Image (tube, rainbow, N blue to C red; front, side, top):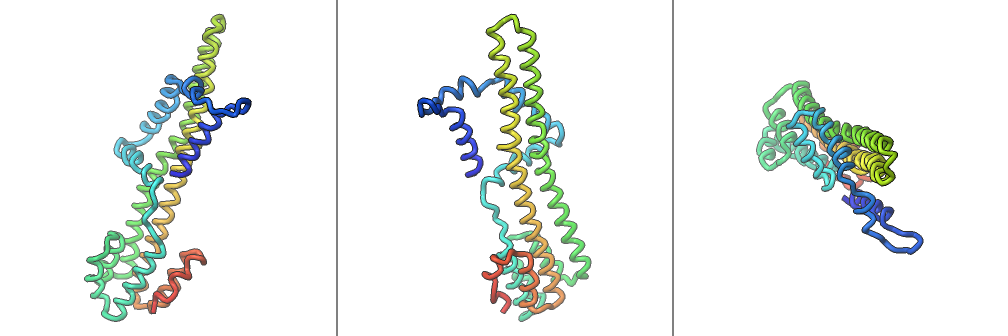
Length: 261
């Protein structure tokens, strides 16, 4: 949210600041930087193009996913490791069957599913196969959403160029009318501007943030898989802790010390 808001404020500052008079001239925005035909060509055209590249359901879910980029991601790798260590201590003291009761208070469906597979005595390789298949399907859905914004960012400048060509064609066709040159040139330049804004202010950052969220979630789920298999194998909680801490950066490992006691 900070990046998006400050980014647009920087653009507004550049549009309105008059260096000679050291004043802000906000009327310049409506007079020089807002053009309805340019908006329809660039924003409308690029959005229609990306909608045409996706199923309607994927388009709707991708647009909704934008909200995920402006709020804190709830996935915490350190917290996931603590949960695994707590489960390993329960399994070590009370046996694997005691994990079924512990699973009732867990909200993470992926972790709960893994616990139930372990409690049911499923072969470890089958447990890994089931959970990794689930993980792969989740990542595939995430990549569909990420691809939506990647494609939109790709089409934005392209439709900006289309608008530029339209403006130039109209300008060259009406060179005999001096009054039409300015508006047609404005359409030509503004569509390129709008296309660059779509790609570099909206779609590029959104796509990258979704990739960051996806990588974090995949790491947490990999921690879950390795932790559950270690619990099923009867490994010592301290050994499990040291194994799972390797997923974290060194600065994040100190807060977990002693969790495997």
